[in-house]
Amino acid sequence: MVPSATALAPCLALLLACLTHGEGLLSPRNVRFVAKVGWHLLRWEPGPSNARYDVEYKVYGSNTPWTAIPECGKTSELSCDLTNYTPDPERRYYARVRAVSGDQKSSWKRTGSFSPQEAGLRLAGQSLSVMGNSIQVRLELLLPPGNISLEYRDLQKTMARYRVYIRRTRDNHTLTVVERSPEFTIRELFWVTEYCLSVEPSLANRHVPTSRTHEQCVTTGHGDRSAELLPAILSSSLITLMLLGLLGALLACTYIRKPVRTPSVLKSFMKQSSLRVEHEPPSSGGLDADPTQQLFLCQKDLSQHRHREPTSA
Image (tube, rainbow, N blue to C red; front, side):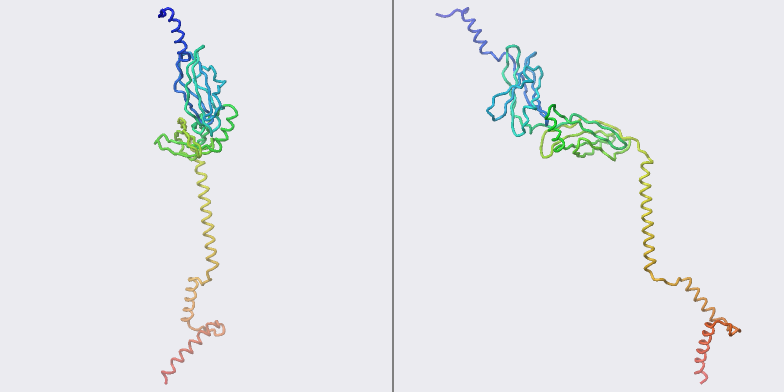
């Protein structure tokens, strides 16, 4: 006997309800980790409107069941912070999300496996201050809440590197320097010149995705001419004094080591005096004459006498 349509209708409705239980709500879409070093955030796109969401996680390769995240149970947000639940860089994790509306629940939507070693690195911001022709930079670290921020701060100190891009706006010339501290100073820039700075963090010995900060521009101050000239004057004076001292030392050494010689002027004067004495006649006052001159005249007469003797012979 064929059952009537009136008798089959309740059975079909009950069967349809059983088949569609848990499938009445659309599942959230694009469930993924958007993680930075020290901050592991799970994100998803909404399913049905006015729905809330449950979040669970699981350690990859372990026998432990899926564990609910208490802070993200029946949440209306489209993200959940899993930093404190996924701390070990040597492990991999899964997460899953489902939509909940009243008694209806969607199917779970799961992520791929995630490791903290894959987390990217970025900064919360930067602050610049100008002192003369120098720019002081202070980087604002992205620190998560809780005790893990202390570990992350230590990580920043020991492993972080900061590539600083300094762009001079008047000609777009860009200088790149690498710093190891979140606070540093860029020195010896041009006076009254606009510079735009951006910073890209990285980790030593670990390749992770990074995000470069937005450019922030400042203008260096006006130069103090007296302050600029004073070091130049002092350095020039010091160099001059050193050269004079060196020259004096060389002259002193030369004078001490060189044998003393009769000055040429004195030599010429002595020669002229001897010639004058030779041509002068003998003085009438023999006893008053100079003994040196008398000796010189006697030698001259003796020489002339010797030259005359062969002639008379």
